[in-house]
Amino acid sequence: MTAQSLAHGQAGRTSPADFDVERVRLDFPILREKVYGKPLIYLDSAATSQKPQGVVAAMARFLLKENANVHRGVHYLAERATEAYEGARSKVQRFLNAEHAQEIIFVRGTTEAINLVAQTYGKKHVGEGTEVLITAMEHHSNIVPWQMLCEQTGARLRVAPVNDAGELLLEDLESLIGPKTRLVAVTHVSNVLGTINPIRRIVEMAHARGARVLVDGAQAAPHLDIDVQALGCDFYALSGHKMYGPTGIGVLYGRRELLLEMPPYQGGGDMILSVSFDKTVYNNPPYKFEAGTPNMVGAVGLAAAIDFLADLGHDALNAHEEDVLAYGILALSQVPGLRLIGTALAKASVLSFVLDGVHPHDIGTILDREGVAIRTGHHCAQPLMNRLGVAATARASLACYSTRADIDALVAGLEKVQEVFR
Amino acid sequence: MSHELRDLYQEVVIDHSKQPRNFRKLEGATRTAEGFNPLCGDHLTLYVKLSDGVIEDIAFQGVGCAISKASASLMTGAVKGKKQEEVLELFRRVHILLTEGPSGRVKPEELGKLAALSGVWEFPMRVKCATLAWHTLRNTLDATGSPFSME
Image 1 (tube, chains in turn brown, red):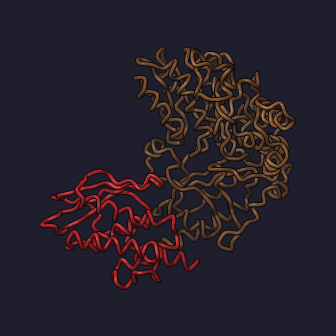
Image 2 (cartoon, chains in turn brown, red):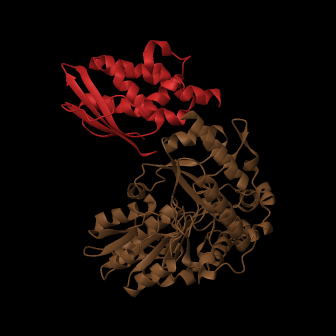
Image 3 (tube, helix red, strand yellow):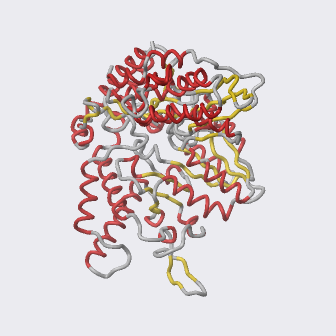
C-alpha cells in the first residue's frame, strides 16, 4: 500500500486491468533478451530501471540533431540545446511540483545531491554543538556525506531507530529533534525494505523545532506521486537512472530562499556572473551549483523518462505495482523457510528476503542461471542490516514492467535453490 | 540444473558449507586476522597457531555464502601441518584453478579435496568469495594483522 492510498483511503483507485503491462513491456527491448538461453526476468529495478525506447530515442535525437554547449553560444544549435536543457529543468519542476524552475539543480545523481547539500548548506549551518539526524534505514549515500560533514565540523550525527518490521519509530525520531538539530536527512522509500516514510509528518516535526529536512527520493521517484510543496521538505534528491532515465543525471530540489544564501558547490564555468583575479561574483541558483558543462543529454533523457511516467498515468501505474507487490508478498510467504525482511504497512515495490540455510549470494547465483536477476548483499545499508540481524538479503524489486509471471519465475527459481541445498 | 551450477555447487562444497570443519574460535592461536568482502557483507575471522613456521592448527568463524564457507573450511583442512611457504605455493595454485578452471595450468586432481572448487571459474563474480579465506590467511602469515578487504 502506498502513501497515497493510505492518505486517500481505497476510494477512486484504478483497477490493474486499466494498465496494459504487455504493451508497456514492448517499450523495453531489453526485456526480450535471453540470458543463458532463458528469458530475462528482471527483478532488480531498485538498483537501476531498464530504459524505454522513448528515452533512448530522445537522447539519440539530441546527440544527432541538437547537440551544442548550453548557455554559451549565440548560434542556432546552442539555442536549441539550451532550450532542451532548460526545458528538462521545467519538466522536473512540474514533476516535483516545485514552485520555481530555479529550485531544480541538475547533478550526477542522488549521491551528489546529498553531498552538495552537506558541503554547502551543511558547511554553513552545521557546526560544533549542533546535530544532524538521519535514520537507521538510510542508504550509505545518506549516511556517509553526513558523517564526513560531522567529522569536518565537530557536529554530532544521531540516528532515529526502526522497528522489526522496518518502520521508523516516529516518537523516538521526534524526541531526537531538538534545538541543536540543524538538519534531518531521511529516505522517502527504503531501498532495502520498501518502507514508505511519512515525510510530511517528519517535516512538521523538524520545522516545529527549526530544523531543515532533506529527503532521499531515489527509490520514491519511480513509484510515488511527489509534490515537494505538499511534503514541505527543504531539499529533495533523486536519480534519473532509477526512474527510467539514464545514469549520470539526477536532481537536487532546494527551496529558493535556502539556495540563494548557500555557498556554491564546485567552482568553474557557468556558475559565475563575472570573474576577475580580485573578485568573482557567483551566478544565481540553479547555475551557482552547476559548474562546468552539464550533462545535457542526461537531462534530455530524464525529461523523456518523466514523459514516459506521465503517459503511464500515476494511478494506473500505482495500482499495477501494488498488485504485483501484493502477489509477490503472498507468493513468497508460501515458500518454505523464507522470511520477508521489511513488512511495513506502507510499502512500495521491494521484496527483501532471507532463506533458511542458504546465503543470499548463492540464491542470486542460482536464480541468475534461471534468467532471474535479483540483487543480493547488504544493499549499501550495512547499519540497517545489523539492526535487522542479517548479514545480507536477497532483494527482488519491481517496476512498471514487472508482472505476476515474473514473481512466478522467482518462486520457481527458489525451488531450484532449495533443490541444490537440500 | 545447468552443468555449470552442478560444477559450482558440488556435493563436497554443499557439505562443507553446511558443516564447515574447524569452524570455531581457536584457543591458543598465535595469530588472527579478519577478512571482509564489502560487496556482499561476508566476514570471517581466521585463527592460526603457528609454530616454527608450521601451521599447527587453524580455525575460522564468520558469515558468508556457501562458496566462501566451503572454501574456508576446505582450506583449513588443506593447510594444517604445512609450512608457511608451502601454504603460499598452494594458494598460488588454488588461485590458478579458481580463475582458469580444470583445464588450466593446474589440474584439480593435484589439489586433493580442494578440487571441489574447480567449478568456481565459470562464475567470475564468485571467485572473490572463494579467495577471501585464502587472502585472509596470507595476511595472517604476513603478520600485518590488518583486516583484509576485498575490493
